[in-house]
Image 1 (tube, helix red, strand yellow):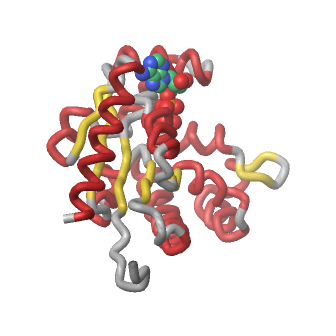
Image 2 (image 1 turned 90 degrees about the vertical axis):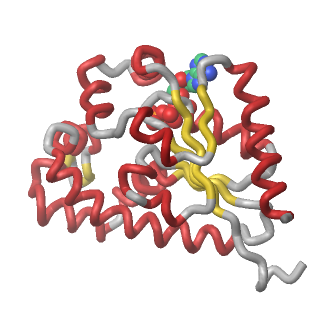
Amino acid sequence: MNFLLKKMIKVGITGGIGSGKTTISKIFETLNIPLFNADIEAKKLFETEEVKKFYLAHFGDAVFSENKLDRQKISNILFSAPDKLMLVNSFIHPLVVELFDNWTIKHIHADYVLKESAILFETGLYKDLDYNILVTAPVETRIKRIIERDKLPQEQIELRMANQWTDEAKVPLADFVIENEDNSLVIKKVLDIHQKILASIKK
Ligand code: ATP
């Protein structure tokens, strides 16, 4: 195949906090689908001078501990101030988009690539992707998982959820929905979606 003529298929995978999108993305990785975790890449940007300067200009010293950006302090401010969260997102998201575009070029040989982000629909970035997969789970299950995983207090989890859309709002925008409650059924759903995407590429 002539890789220069090949159109790279980009698939988004999203879901609210604790829905299990990372767990499911890892199943796609076992099928040799390269995974770009936008949330992790955004966190890595915290180390860069560009991002440090941005926070210093807009939030001052209050979000630093020993010259490093303090994610806990930032979360405390941002998740209770939607206007500030929007300001930060409008700065960070284009930087992550650029990283994703550069990363995608390196994976041109893959059948398709997967982009994982908690807020693909909220940011509108889902529109840049060929297909979007939504991972859902009941709110109570998600809260229980995050309390177990991160030992976060329930109020903090609910605050984060309040900044994300509900599953009901996201379902109509998704091409595929994975209800992630039972591990054994999830693998079959992933394989089914994988086959459908491959079939659509070969058409
Ligand atoms: P976040 O947005 O907070 O990163 P996430 O959507 O990526 O969350 P995961 O990290 O994949 O979610 O899952 C959250 C926790 O729930 C993890 O500890 C994971 O092991 C567990 N988990 C995920 N799916 C299931 C499942 N089907 N059954 C039981 N536990 C699960």
